[in-house]
Amino acid sequence: MDSRSTSAISGISRLRRSRTALAAGAATLAASLLAAGATAGTANAAASSAPSATRSGATAVSLSPSVRAELLREAGSTAVSTAKSLGLGAKEKLVVKDVVKDADGTTHTRYERTYAGLPVLGGDLIVHESASGASQGADKATDADIKVRDTSAAIAPSGAERSALSAARAAGDKKSGAETARKVIWAATGKPTLAYETVVKGVQKDGTPSKLHVITDADSGRKLYEYQAVENGTGTGQHNGKVTVGSVKSGSQWLLKDTARGGHQTYNLKHSWDETKKGSAFYDADNVWGNGKPTIAQTAAVDAHYGAAMTWDYYKKVLGRNGIKGNGKAAYSRVHFGDAYENAFWDDDCFCMTYGDGAGNKKPLTSLDVAGHEMSHGLTSATANLEYSGESGGLNEATSDIFGTAVEWYAKNAKDPGDYLIGEKIDINGDGTPLRYMDKPSKDGLSYDYWKSGVGNDDPHFTSGIANHFFYLLAEGSGRKVIGGVTYNSPTKDGRTVKGIGRAKAEKIWYKALTTYMTSTTNYAKARTATLKAAKALYGATSAEYKAVDNAWGGVNVK
Image (cartoon, rainbow, N blue to C red; front, side, top):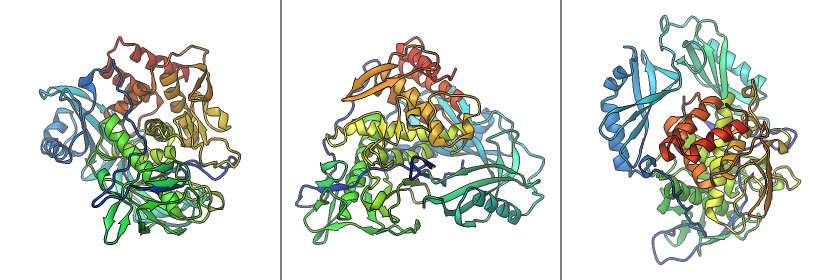
Protein backbone atom coordinates (compact mmCIF):
# COMPACT_ATOMS: atom_id res chain seq x y z
CA MET A 1 0.00 0.00 0.00
CA ASP A 2 0.94 3.66 -0.11
CA SER A 3 4.13 4.21 1.84
CA ARG A 4 3.20 7.56 3.36
CA SER A 5 3.00 6.49 6.95
CA THR A 6 3.73 7.65 10.43
CA SER A 7 3.69 5.45 13.49
CA ALA A 8 3.79 6.39 17.17
CA ILE A 9 4.72 4.13 20.05
CA SER A 10 2.13 5.02 22.66
CA GLY A 11 -0.50 7.28 24.09
CA ILE A 12 0.21 9.49 27.05
CA SER A 13 -1.32 7.54 29.89
CA ARG A 14 -2.41 4.08 30.95
CA LEU A 15 -6.05 5.17 30.66
CA ARG A 16 -5.82 6.53 27.17
CA ARG A 17 -3.13 4.87 25.17
CA SER A 18 -3.50 5.13 21.43
CA ARG A 19 -0.14 3.50 21.09
CA THR A 20 1.38 4.22 17.76
CA ALA A 21 4.70 5.69 18.87
CA LEU A 22 7.68 4.38 20.82
CA ALA A 23 10.67 6.11 22.30
CA ALA A 24 13.64 5.86 24.57
CA GLY A 25 15.49 7.97 27.10
CA ALA A 26 17.80 10.92 26.68
CA ALA A 27 21.48 10.43 26.08
CA THR A 28 24.89 11.87 26.74
CA LEU A 29 27.94 11.27 24.62
CA ALA A 30 31.66 11.19 25.25
CA ALA A 31 32.91 10.48 21.74
CA SER A 32 36.59 9.84 21.20
CA LEU A 33 38.44 12.81 19.77
CA LEU A 34 39.76 11.86 16.38
CA ALA A 35 42.32 13.80 14.43
CA ALA A 36 40.08 13.83 11.38
CA GLY A 37 37.01 12.30 9.77
CA ALA A 38 34.30 10.44 11.64
CA THR A 39 33.83 8.36 14.75
CA ALA A 40 31.88 5.14 14.61
CA GLY A 41 29.30 4.55 17.32
CA THR A 42 29.40 1.06 18.74
CA ALA A 43 28.83 1.33 22.47
CA ASN A 44 29.63 -2.08 23.88
CA ALA A 45 27.71 -3.81 21.09
CA ALA A 46 28.37 -7.39 20.05
CA ALA A 47 26.73 -9.40 17.31
CA SER A 48 24.35 -12.15 18.33
CA SER A 49 25.68 -15.63 17.71
CA ALA A 50 24.30 -17.31 14.60
CA PRO A 51 22.00 -20.29 15.08
CA SER A 52 24.06 -23.44 14.55
CA ALA A 53 21.27 -25.30 12.78
CA THR A 54 20.47 -22.62 10.22
CA ARG A 55 20.50 -23.68 6.57
CA SER A 56 22.90 -21.02 5.40
CA GLY A 57 21.58 -21.08 1.84
CA ALA A 58 18.21 -19.69 2.95
CA THR A 59 19.69 -16.80 4.93
CA ALA A 60 19.44 -13.36 3.32
CA VAL A 61 22.74 -11.79 2.31
CA SER A 62 23.68 -8.14 2.68
CA LEU A 63 23.52 -6.43 -0.71
CA SER A 64 25.70 -3.48 -1.64
CA PRO A 65 23.73 -0.50 -3.04
CA SER A 66 25.05 -1.21 -6.54
CA VAL A 67 24.18 -4.92 -6.47
CA ARG A 68 20.72 -4.18 -5.09
CA ALA A 69 20.14 -1.51 -7.75
CA GLU A 70 21.12 -3.97 -10.49
CA LEU A 71 18.75 -6.65 -9.15
CA LEU A 72 15.93 -4.09 -9.06
CA ARG A 73 16.77 -2.96 -12.60
CA GLU A 74 16.74 -6.54 -13.87
CA ALA A 75 13.39 -7.20 -12.19
CA GLY A 76 11.97 -4.02 -13.69
CA SER A 77 13.11 -4.99 -17.18
CA THR A 78 11.28 -8.32 -16.95
CA ALA A 79 8.18 -7.03 -15.14
CA VAL A 80 5.94 -7.49 -18.20
CA SER A 81 6.88 -11.14 -18.65
CA THR A 82 6.59 -11.71 -14.90
CA ALA A 83 3.05 -10.32 -14.94
CA LYS A 84 2.14 -12.65 -17.82
CA SER A 85 3.62 -15.67 -16.04
CA LEU A 86 1.42 -14.86 -13.04
CA GLY A 87 -1.67 -14.67 -15.21
CA LEU A 88 -2.33 -10.99 -14.55
CA GLY A 89 -4.73 -9.10 -16.78
CA ALA A 90 -3.77 -6.90 -19.71
CA LYS A 91 -4.45 -3.71 -17.73
CA GLU A 92 -2.25 -4.77 -14.81
CA LYS A 93 1.39 -3.78 -14.48
CA LEU A 94 3.99 -4.64 -11.87
CA VAL A 95 6.22 -2.01 -10.23
CA VAL A 96 9.33 -3.30 -8.46
CA LYS A 97 9.61 -2.26 -4.81
CA ASP A 98 12.22 -4.42 -3.08
CA VAL A 99 14.40 -7.49 -3.49
CA VAL A 100 15.93 -9.95 -1.04
CA LYS A 101 18.61 -12.40 -2.12
CA ASP A 102 19.48 -15.56 -0.20
CA ALA A 103 22.94 -17.07 0.10
CA ASP A 104 22.01 -19.86 -2.33
CA GLY A 105 21.05 -17.31 -5.01
CA THR A 106 17.29 -17.48 -4.54
CA THR A 107 15.65 -14.08 -5.00
CA HIS A 108 12.42 -12.78 -3.51
CA THR A 109 11.22 -9.77 -5.48
CA ARG A 110 8.42 -7.60 -4.10
CA TYR A 111 6.11 -5.74 -6.49
CA GLU A 112 3.34 -3.18 -6.22
CA ARG A 113 0.61 -3.32 -8.85
CA THR A 114 -1.28 -0.86 -11.06
CA TYR A 115 -4.50 -1.31 -13.03
CA ALA A 116 -5.14 0.94 -16.02
CA GLY A 117 -2.48 3.24 -14.55
CA LEU A 118 -4.12 3.44 -11.11
CA PRO A 119 -2.35 2.21 -7.95
CA VAL A 120 -3.82 -1.04 -6.61
CA LEU A 121 -3.89 -0.81 -2.82
CA GLY A 122 -3.61 -4.35 -1.47
CA GLY A 123 -2.33 -5.69 -4.78
CA ASP A 124 1.27 -6.26 -3.74
CA LEU A 125 2.97 -9.61 -4.23
CA ILE A 126 6.33 -11.38 -3.87
CA VAL A 127 7.81 -13.57 -6.60
CA HIS A 128 10.30 -16.27 -5.59
CA GLU A 129 12.90 -17.49 -8.08
CA SER A 130 15.80 -19.92 -7.72
CA ALA A 131 19.39 -19.08 -8.68
CA SER A 132 18.84 -20.89 -11.99
CA GLY A 133 15.79 -18.76 -12.76
CA ALA A 134 13.19 -21.42 -11.99
CA SER A 135 9.93 -20.19 -10.48
CA GLN A 136 9.36 -21.05 -6.83
CA GLY A 137 5.89 -19.54 -6.61
CA ALA A 138 4.48 -16.24 -5.39
CA ASP A 139 2.80 -14.82 -2.30
CA LYS A 140 -0.01 -12.33 -2.97
CA ALA A 141 -1.82 -9.83 -0.78
CA THR A 142 -5.03 -10.82 -2.59
CA ASP A 143 -6.01 -13.73 -4.81
CA ALA A 144 -8.89 -11.77 -6.34
CA ASP A 145 -8.85 -10.89 -10.04
CA ILE A 146 -8.09 -7.18 -10.31
CA LYS A 147 -10.76 -5.68 -12.55
CA VAL A 148 -13.49 -3.06 -12.32
CA ARG A 149 -16.30 -2.14 -14.72
CA ASP A 150 -14.57 1.12 -15.68
CA THR A 151 -12.37 3.79 -14.13
CA SER A 152 -14.84 6.68 -14.34
CA ALA A 153 -15.95 7.80 -10.88
CA ALA A 154 -19.55 8.75 -10.11
CA ILE A 155 -18.54 11.19 -7.38
CA ALA A 156 -16.02 14.01 -7.61
CA PRO A 157 -12.75 14.03 -5.62
CA SER A 158 -14.17 16.83 -3.47
CA GLY A 159 -16.88 14.49 -2.21
CA ALA A 160 -14.26 11.97 -1.08
CA GLU A 161 -12.30 14.75 0.60
CA ARG A 162 -15.35 15.87 2.61
CA SER A 163 -15.98 12.28 3.68
CA ALA A 164 -12.34 11.92 4.76
CA LEU A 165 -12.49 15.12 6.82
CA SER A 166 -15.56 13.78 8.60
CA ALA A 167 -13.67 10.57 9.39
CA ALA A 168 -10.78 12.58 10.83
CA ARG A 169 -13.10 14.62 13.03
CA ALA A 170 -14.75 11.42 14.24
CA ALA A 171 -11.29 10.12 15.20
CA GLY A 172 -10.76 13.23 17.32
CA ASP A 173 -8.14 14.86 15.08
CA LYS A 174 -7.66 18.63 15.25
CA LYS A 175 -6.53 21.19 12.69
CA SER A 176 -7.39 18.79 9.90
CA GLY A 177 -6.93 19.49 6.23
CA ALA A 178 -7.45 17.07 3.33
CA GLU A 179 -5.03 16.64 0.46
CA THR A 180 -6.43 16.16 -3.04
CA ALA A 181 -8.01 12.71 -3.31
CA ARG A 182 -6.31 10.33 -5.72
CA LYS A 183 -8.12 7.63 -7.66
CA VAL A 184 -7.07 4.05 -6.82
CA ILE A 185 -8.24 0.46 -7.00
CA TRP A 186 -9.01 -0.84 -3.51
CA ALA A 187 -8.20 -4.57 -3.33
CA ALA A 188 -7.10 -5.09 0.27
CA THR A 189 -10.55 -6.21 1.41
CA GLY A 190 -13.45 -7.73 -0.48
CA LYS A 191 -14.04 -7.32 -4.20
CA PRO A 192 -11.66 -4.91 -6.00
CA THR A 193 -13.35 -1.51 -6.17
CA LEU A 194 -12.71 1.82 -7.86
CA ALA A 195 -12.02 4.20 -4.99
CA TYR A 196 -10.45 7.43 -3.81
CA GLU A 197 -7.64 7.62 -1.27
CA THR A 198 -7.57 10.87 0.69
CA VAL A 199 -4.88 11.79 3.22
CA VAL A 200 -6.08 14.09 5.99
CA LYS A 201 -3.30 15.80 7.90
CA GLY A 202 -3.80 17.20 11.36
CA VAL A 203 -3.01 16.55 15.01
CA GLN A 204 -4.11 13.58 17.13
CA LYS A 205 -5.45 13.99 20.66
CA ASP A 206 -2.06 13.58 22.32
CA GLY A 207 -0.26 15.98 19.98
CA THR A 208 1.09 13.32 17.62
CA PRO A 209 0.90 14.41 13.98
CA SER A 210 -1.93 12.73 12.09
CA LYS A 211 -1.95 11.44 8.53
CA LEU A 212 -5.24 9.61 8.26
CA HIS A 213 -5.68 7.68 5.01
CA VAL A 214 -9.36 7.28 4.11
CA ILE A 215 -10.53 5.02 1.28
CA THR A 216 -13.88 5.98 -0.26
CA ASP A 217 -15.94 4.10 -2.86
CA ALA A 218 -15.70 6.26 -6.00
CA ASP A 219 -19.26 5.44 -7.06
CA SER A 220 -21.28 5.39 -3.83
CA GLY A 221 -19.15 7.66 -1.63
CA ARG A 222 -19.19 5.01 1.13
CA LYS A 223 -16.12 4.81 3.36
CA LEU A 224 -14.40 1.48 2.73
CA TYR A 225 -11.39 1.71 5.03
CA GLU A 226 -9.17 4.02 7.01
CA TYR A 227 -5.78 3.77 8.65
CA GLN A 228 -3.45 6.07 10.55
CA ALA A 229 -0.10 6.46 8.84
CA VAL A 230 1.75 8.06 11.75
CA GLU A 231 2.83 5.00 13.65
CA ASN A 232 3.23 5.84 17.17
CA GLY A 233 6.24 4.08 16.79
CA THR A 234 31.43 9.15 23.30
CA GLY A 235 28.61 10.65 25.14
CA THR A 236 26.49 10.07 28.12
CA GLY A 237 22.82 9.39 27.60
CA GLN A 238 20.04 9.52 30.12
CA HIS A 239 19.04 5.95 29.31
CA ASN A 240 22.18 4.42 27.82
CA GLY A 241 24.99 5.95 29.86
CA LYS A 242 28.41 6.66 28.38
CA VAL A 243 28.51 5.43 24.78
CA THR A 244 30.34 6.03 21.51
CA VAL A 245 28.48 8.05 18.90
CA GLY A 246 29.15 8.86 15.26
CA SER A 247 30.41 12.40 14.68
CA VAL A 248 32.43 14.20 12.02
CA LYS A 249 34.68 17.25 12.06
CA SER A 250 32.97 20.34 10.64
CA GLY A 251 35.22 23.39 10.56
CA SER A 252 36.40 24.02 14.10
CA GLN A 253 33.50 22.02 15.59
CA TRP A 254 32.10 18.52 15.60
CA LEU A 255 28.82 17.60 13.91
CA LEU A 256 26.60 14.79 15.25
CA LYS A 257 26.55 12.79 12.02
CA ASP A 258 27.35 9.10 11.64
CA THR A 259 29.08 8.67 8.28
CA ALA A 260 29.81 5.01 9.08
CA ARG A 261 26.10 4.23 9.10
CA GLY A 262 24.62 5.76 6.00
CA GLY A 263 25.03 9.36 7.16
CA HIS A 264 22.51 9.24 10.01
CA GLN A 265 22.09 12.62 11.65
CA THR A 266 20.19 13.80 14.73
CA TYR A 267 18.45 17.20 14.84
CA ASN A 268 17.03 19.48 17.53
CA LEU A 269 13.40 20.60 17.11
CA LYS A 270 13.67 22.86 20.17
CA HIS A 271 10.13 21.98 21.37
CA SER A 272 8.47 22.97 18.10
CA TRP A 273 5.18 21.21 17.27
CA ASP A 274 5.80 21.75 13.55
CA GLU A 275 6.26 18.25 12.09
CA THR A 276 7.42 19.70 8.76
CA LYS A 277 10.61 21.11 10.30
CA LYS A 278 13.84 19.15 10.19
CA GLY A 279 15.33 21.01 13.13
CA SER A 280 18.81 22.30 13.84
CA ALA A 281 21.96 20.20 13.60
CA PHE A 282 23.88 19.42 16.79
CA TYR A 283 27.44 20.83 17.03
CA ASP A 284 29.97 20.54 19.83
CA ALA A 285 33.40 22.04 20.45
CA ASP A 286 35.16 19.07 22.06
CA ASN A 287 33.20 16.05 20.73
CA VAL A 288 32.01 15.11 24.21
CA TRP A 289 28.22 15.17 24.09
CA GLY A 290 25.53 15.34 26.77
CA ASN A 291 25.73 14.99 30.53
CA GLY A 292 23.35 12.11 31.25
CA LYS A 293 20.61 14.46 32.41
CA PRO A 294 17.73 16.17 30.58
CA THR A 295 19.12 19.57 31.56
CA ILE A 296 20.87 20.02 28.22
CA ALA A 297 19.54 19.31 24.73
CA GLN A 298 22.46 17.07 23.72
CA THR A 299 21.56 14.32 26.18
CA ALA A 300 18.43 13.18 24.34
CA ALA A 301 20.34 13.48 21.06
CA VAL A 302 22.98 11.05 22.35
CA ASP A 303 20.40 8.38 23.16
CA ALA A 304 18.57 8.79 19.84
CA HIS A 305 21.83 8.79 17.86
CA TYR A 306 23.14 5.74 19.71
CA GLY A 307 19.83 3.91 19.30
CA ALA A 308 19.93 4.50 15.55
CA ALA A 309 23.52 3.21 15.43
CA MET A 310 22.70 0.04 17.34
CA THR A 311 19.67 -0.62 15.12
CA TRP A 312 21.75 -0.13 11.98
CA ASP A 313 24.41 -2.50 13.30
CA TYR A 314 21.82 -5.11 14.30
CA TYR A 315 20.20 -4.98 10.87
CA LYS A 316 23.54 -5.33 9.10
CA LYS A 317 25.42 -7.80 11.32
CA VAL A 318 22.53 -10.03 12.38
CA LEU A 319 19.91 -9.71 9.63
CA GLY A 320 22.24 -8.98 6.73
CA ARG A 321 20.34 -5.81 5.79
CA ASN A 322 22.14 -2.64 4.70
CA GLY A 323 19.91 -0.04 6.34
CA ILE A 324 16.15 0.30 6.60
CA LYS A 325 15.55 0.11 2.85
CA GLY A 326 18.53 -2.11 2.16
CA ASN A 327 20.15 0.64 0.08
CA GLY A 328 22.83 1.80 2.51
CA LYS A 329 21.10 5.12 3.22
CA ALA A 330 20.16 6.18 6.74
CA ALA A 331 17.04 7.80 8.10
CA TYR A 332 17.45 10.75 10.48
CA SER A 333 16.31 11.46 14.02
CA ARG A 334 14.61 14.50 15.56
CA VAL A 335 14.55 15.11 19.32
CA HIS A 336 12.71 17.61 21.54
CA PHE A 337 9.43 17.54 19.59
CA GLY A 338 6.65 19.56 21.21
CA ASP A 339 6.28 20.50 24.85
CA ALA A 340 6.13 17.60 27.32
CA TYR A 341 5.10 15.36 24.41
CA GLU A 342 4.86 11.81 25.75
CA ASN A 343 5.38 9.84 22.56
CA ALA A 344 7.69 9.08 19.64
CA PHE A 345 6.85 8.26 16.04
CA TRP A 346 8.13 7.16 12.66
CA ASP A 347 7.09 9.04 9.51
CA ASP A 348 7.67 7.64 6.02
CA ASP A 349 7.26 11.06 4.43
CA CYS A 350 10.38 12.44 6.09
CA PHE A 351 11.98 9.00 6.49
CA CYS A 352 12.71 9.93 10.08
CA MET A 353 12.19 9.15 13.78
CA THR A 354 10.82 11.85 16.10
CA TYR A 355 10.98 11.84 19.90
CA GLY A 356 9.17 13.83 22.57
CA ASP A 357 10.62 14.72 25.97
CA GLY A 358 7.92 13.11 28.09
CA ALA A 359 6.36 14.37 31.32
CA GLY A 360 7.76 17.73 32.37
CA ASN A 361 10.24 17.52 29.49
CA LYS A 362 12.37 15.31 31.77
CA LYS A 363 11.64 11.80 30.47
CA PRO A 364 12.61 11.76 26.78
CA LEU A 365 11.31 8.77 24.85
CA THR A 366 14.73 7.94 23.43
CA SER A 367 15.41 4.55 25.02
CA LEU A 368 17.14 1.82 23.06
CA ASP A 369 14.09 -0.38 22.46
CA VAL A 370 12.02 2.64 21.45
CA ALA A 371 14.62 3.71 18.88
CA GLY A 372 14.73 0.17 17.47
CA HIS A 373 10.92 0.09 17.48
CA GLU A 374 10.59 3.30 15.46
CA MET A 375 13.24 2.43 12.89
CA SER A 376 11.59 -0.96 12.44
CA HIS A 377 8.37 0.74 11.36
CA GLY A 378 10.51 1.95 8.47
CA LEU A 379 11.70 -1.61 7.87
CA THR A 380 8.11 -2.88 7.73
CA SER A 381 7.14 -0.09 5.35
CA ALA A 382 10.06 -0.94 3.05
CA THR A 383 9.16 -4.64 2.97
CA ALA A 384 5.74 -6.15 3.76
CA ASN A 385 4.17 -2.69 4.29
CA LEU A 386 1.61 -4.18 6.67
CA GLU A 387 -1.53 -2.04 6.71
CA TYR A 388 -1.79 -0.08 9.92
CA SER A 389 -5.29 -1.30 10.68
CA GLY A 390 -7.00 -4.59 11.49
CA GLU A 391 -4.89 -7.65 12.28
CA SER A 392 -2.12 -6.50 9.94
CA GLY A 393 -1.85 -3.36 12.07
CA GLY A 394 -1.20 -5.50 15.15
CA LEU A 395 1.48 -7.41 13.24
CA ASN A 396 3.01 -4.08 12.18
CA GLU A 397 3.29 -2.92 15.79
CA ALA A 398 4.53 -6.30 17.00
CA THR A 399 7.27 -6.32 14.35
CA SER A 400 8.58 -3.06 15.79
CA ASP A 401 8.38 -4.42 19.34
CA ILE A 402 10.18 -7.62 18.29
CA PHE A 403 13.05 -5.86 16.58
CA GLY A 404 13.20 -3.09 19.20
CA THR A 405 13.67 -5.86 21.77
CA ALA A 406 16.24 -7.58 19.55
CA VAL A 407 18.27 -4.35 19.26
CA GLU A 408 18.25 -3.95 23.05
CA TRP A 409 19.62 -7.48 23.51
CA TYR A 410 22.16 -6.97 20.71
CA ALA A 411 23.63 -3.77 22.20
CA LYS A 412 24.62 -5.43 25.50
CA ASN A 413 24.42 -2.05 27.22
CA ALA A 414 24.80 -2.37 30.99
CA LYS A 415 22.59 0.69 31.57
CA ASP A 416 19.75 -0.84 29.52
CA PRO A 417 20.21 -4.62 29.39
CA GLY A 418 18.09 -6.78 27.13
CA ASP A 419 14.66 -7.92 28.30
CA TYR A 420 11.18 -8.74 27.02
CA LEU A 421 9.67 -5.50 28.32
CA ILE A 422 8.81 -2.62 25.99
CA GLY A 423 9.62 0.94 27.03
CA GLU A 424 10.63 0.02 30.57
CA LYS A 425 13.09 2.94 30.75
CA ILE A 426 10.80 5.76 29.69
CA ASP A 427 8.24 5.52 32.52
CA ILE A 428 5.37 6.59 30.29
CA ASN A 429 2.83 5.34 32.86
CA GLY A 430 4.39 7.42 35.63
CA ASP A 431 4.64 4.46 38.01
CA GLY A 432 7.79 2.75 36.78
CA THR A 433 5.95 0.01 34.86
CA PRO A 434 6.79 -0.89 31.24
CA LEU A 435 4.63 0.14 28.32
CA ARG A 436 4.14 -3.46 27.18
CA TYR A 437 5.03 -7.02 28.25
CA MET A 438 5.87 -9.76 25.75
CA ASP A 439 5.55 -12.79 28.02
CA LYS A 440 1.98 -11.96 29.04
CA PRO A 441 0.78 -8.87 27.15
CA SER A 442 -2.47 -8.52 29.13
CA LYS A 443 -0.45 -7.42 32.17
CA ASP A 444 -0.66 -3.88 30.80
CA GLY A 445 -4.46 -4.04 31.17
CA LEU A 446 -5.12 -3.46 27.48
CA SER A 447 -3.26 -5.90 25.24
CA TYR A 448 -4.35 -9.33 24.04
CA ASP A 449 -2.63 -12.57 25.03
CA TYR A 450 -4.50 -14.68 22.47
CA TRP A 451 -6.22 -14.38 19.11
CA LYS A 452 -10.01 -14.32 18.96
CA SER A 453 -12.54 -13.47 16.28
CA GLY A 454 -12.95 -9.71 15.81
CA VAL A 455 -9.64 -8.83 17.47
CA GLY A 456 -8.66 -6.79 14.44
CA ASN A 457 -11.25 -4.16 15.32
CA ASP A 458 -9.15 -2.94 18.26
CA ASP A 459 -6.11 -0.65 18.40
CA PRO A 460 -2.99 -2.18 16.74
CA HIS A 461 -0.99 -1.44 19.89
CA PHE A 462 -3.23 -3.81 21.82
CA THR A 463 -3.65 -6.50 19.15
CA SER A 464 0.14 -6.59 18.77
CA GLY A 465 0.13 -8.56 22.01
CA ILE A 466 -0.75 -11.77 20.15
CA ALA A 467 2.38 -11.68 17.99
CA ASN A 468 4.54 -10.40 20.84
CA HIS A 469 3.35 -13.34 22.95
CA PHE A 470 4.02 -15.75 20.07
CA PHE A 471 7.55 -14.41 19.71
CA TYR A 472 8.29 -14.74 23.42
CA LEU A 473 6.97 -18.32 23.46
CA LEU A 474 9.00 -19.20 20.37
CA ALA A 475 12.20 -17.71 21.83
CA GLU A 476 11.92 -18.66 25.51
CA GLY A 477 9.01 -21.07 25.93
CA SER A 478 6.05 -21.12 28.32
CA GLY A 479 5.97 -21.09 32.11
CA ARG A 480 7.89 -19.27 34.80
CA LYS A 481 11.57 -18.40 34.38
CA VAL A 482 14.10 -15.74 35.27
CA ILE A 483 16.04 -14.23 32.36
CA GLY A 484 18.64 -11.55 32.94
CA GLY A 485 17.30 -10.93 36.43
CA VAL A 486 13.72 -10.39 35.23
CA THR A 487 10.98 -12.86 36.17
CA TYR A 488 8.61 -13.95 33.40
CA ASN A 489 5.63 -16.28 33.47
CA SER A 490 4.15 -16.95 30.05
CA PRO A 491 0.85 -18.86 29.78
CA THR A 492 -0.74 -20.54 26.76
CA LYS A 493 -4.37 -20.50 25.70
CA ASP A 494 -4.97 -24.24 26.10
CA GLY A 495 -2.37 -24.96 28.78
CA ARG A 496 0.09 -26.56 26.35
CA THR A 497 3.81 -26.48 27.04
CA VAL A 498 5.94 -24.62 24.53
CA LYS A 499 9.69 -25.14 24.40
CA GLY A 500 11.65 -22.14 23.16
CA ILE A 501 14.25 -22.31 20.39
CA GLY A 502 16.25 -19.27 21.45
CA ARG A 503 15.91 -15.62 20.61
CA ALA A 504 18.42 -15.63 17.73
CA LYS A 505 16.50 -18.25 15.77
CA ALA A 506 13.15 -16.61 16.54
CA GLU A 507 14.47 -13.28 15.21
CA LYS A 508 15.70 -14.82 11.97
CA ILE A 509 12.39 -16.61 11.40
CA TRP A 510 10.37 -13.42 11.93
CA TYR A 511 12.66 -11.38 9.68
CA LYS A 512 12.54 -13.90 6.84
CA ALA A 513 8.76 -14.15 7.14
CA LEU A 514 8.42 -10.34 7.07
CA THR A 515 10.73 -9.74 4.13
CA THR A 516 10.00 -12.83 2.05
CA TYR A 517 6.42 -14.03 2.64
CA MET A 518 4.25 -11.35 4.34
CA THR A 519 2.26 -8.81 2.30
CA SER A 520 0.28 -5.67 3.13
CA THR A 521 -2.84 -7.65 4.02
CA THR A 522 -1.26 -10.42 6.12
CA ASN A 523 -3.44 -11.32 9.12
CA TYR A 524 -2.63 -13.63 12.02
CA ALA A 525 -3.53 -16.82 10.15
CA LYS A 526 -1.33 -15.77 7.23
CA ALA A 527 1.45 -14.73 9.62
CA ARG A 528 1.42 -18.29 10.94
CA THR A 529 1.79 -19.58 7.37
CA ALA A 530 4.57 -17.08 6.62
CA THR A 531 6.61 -18.00 9.70
CA LEU A 532 6.18 -21.71 9.00
CA LYS A 533 7.48 -21.11 5.46
CA ALA A 534 10.41 -19.20 6.92
CA ALA A 535 11.19 -21.93 9.45
CA LYS A 536 11.02 -24.56 6.70
CA ALA A 537 13.40 -22.60 4.49
CA LEU A 538 15.86 -21.95 7.32
CA TYR A 539 15.72 -25.21 9.24
CA GLY A 540 13.65 -27.77 7.33
CA ALA A 541 10.06 -29.01 7.51
CA THR A 542 10.90 -31.75 10.01
CA SER A 543 13.06 -29.56 12.24
CA ALA A 544 12.44 -28.76 15.90
CA GLU A 545 12.31 -25.10 14.89
CA TYR A 546 9.45 -25.68 12.43
CA LYS A 547 7.50 -27.64 15.03
CA ALA A 548 8.16 -24.95 17.64
CA VAL A 549 6.71 -22.26 15.37
CA ASP A 550 3.54 -24.31 14.95
CA ASN A 551 3.34 -24.99 18.69
CA ALA A 552 3.91 -21.35 19.69
CA TRP A 553 1.12 -20.14 17.38
CA GLY A 554 -1.15 -22.78 18.91
CA GLY A 555 -0.25 -21.37 22.31
CA VAL A 556 -1.75 -17.99 21.32
CA ASN A 557 -4.79 -19.62 19.66
CA VAL A 558 -3.72 -19.11 16.04
CA LYS A 559 -4.21 -22.46 14.30
